[in-house]
Length: 343
Image (tube, rainbow, N blue to C red; front, side, top):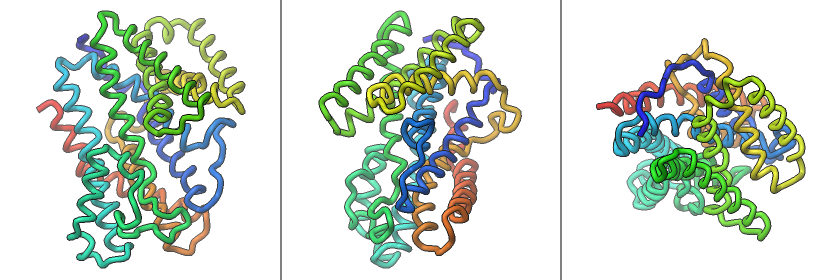
């Protein structure tokens, strides 16, 4: 593997990730209030596009991480420490705290139940996607009578596909002498699979979501590999920007384009903006975006359904509480675990 890739915080990816996390809160607040989520640039909701932005940045940075890490074990350790400790604590909050205090059975009865343990293990071992299909009794009937019922955390399911892409990109970068070959094949296979799913009406989450999220992830990896060829050549850079903007425009109303080419166009614009502006605010000192993403949903569920405040005040309160909890998660869970990645 290639070692020694620069890790300076000479980009604005941290800021973009935080903006994307807030976009998810904004979008979900409509859905959790029983309203249609607003469209982002005419293609998908703010939340769905924010997730594509997350995968775009991950594809770029994770491929960089793999190529500078000396061993596969070191790479796997870094990825594990970034995802699982934060998720493990978030699930305690969601399943035990929220489910215990706002569910049907009493707190002590619920937290000591086999059902709570089963739900926790199901979700943690399936890296979030286990929340899909959890029955009301599996969450102590938390959210059972909410506007969007029986949904305790509708964000964490995407983490499974993030981890899948961590593994897929490691194989893609290591199986061929030329890094671009494996990544290009991963991208093409994902596009073909997504088209097949659309054309034949395949709705299986494992196929639709895997291919959809892998497209911007793999394209982000390719943009990292070819950075010297496009980012430092203004003619190429701006030509690709124009093409991306045209793709985003013509993707409106076209399902195949919006699920295949649009994610790549959005990926390019995201990475171009991220690489073109230097972060003068966060500068790598913290990253609340993961915590915001995984904690927001249950907090919004509670604020919307357990209080009588208006739509936008409840959104603002949800945002404030989520940022507070996300900051606690960062400083007391995520950051300490990340400090162990080189130990």
